[in-house]
Structures are given as C-alpha cells and as structure tokens.
Length: 101
Image 1 (cartoon, rainbow, N blue to C red):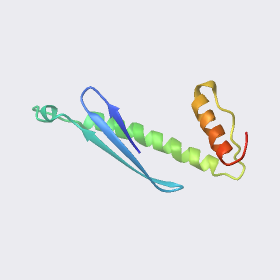
Image 2 (image 1 turned 90 degrees about the horizontal axis):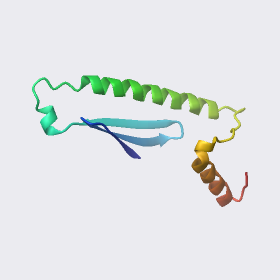
Image 3 (image 1 turned 90 degrees about the vertical axis):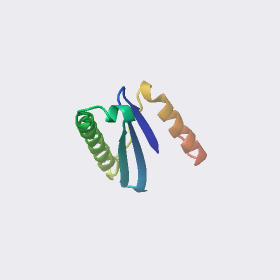
Image 4 (image 1 turned 60 degrees about the vertical axis):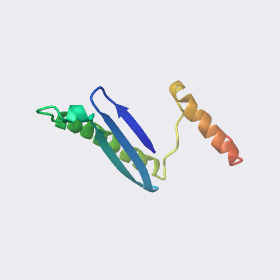
C-alpha cells in the first residue's frame, strides 16, 4: 500500500510491502518542489530526521503489537466507539467465513 503525508514544504510517500506474516518492507521518500530544493541553503534534514524518528517509533509500536497478538494467550478485546468501521469489517469477514461474533 502507499500513503502520502502532505506537508506545506514537502510530501513524504510511504510504501508498505508485506514480505511475510511477520515481516514488512517500508520505503519512505521525501519529495520536494524543485524550486524549494534549488533555494540557497536548502537543508531538508530537520524534517527528514523528525519523520524518521516518528516513523521508527510507530514501527516499534507495530512490532510490539504483533508480538502481543502472536502470543498463545492473546484474546482480542472489544472495539471502542471510534473503531466502528473496524468492527464492521471484522463482522463482515467472519460472516464470509461462516462464523459469527
């Protein structure tokens, strides 16, 4: 999948490619307007470093979540009201398998 993070001075394009059930390749590219990159003193490192840190923190949370749900004792909890679309997807998916919640 691909998603875009649109900022006033750049766009970050992030591609997520599943390699296995427990392995994903992530590629993030920063896209700057040519006129911005041509400015004297152009230095994208502040934004790149901030997003690199933020992404690495997010990825670590995903790794920890995968460890948790991979546990033999894991049991899913209930969804919050803000996750109604996820709950509906789960119900539809289980119904397609002939199971119910």
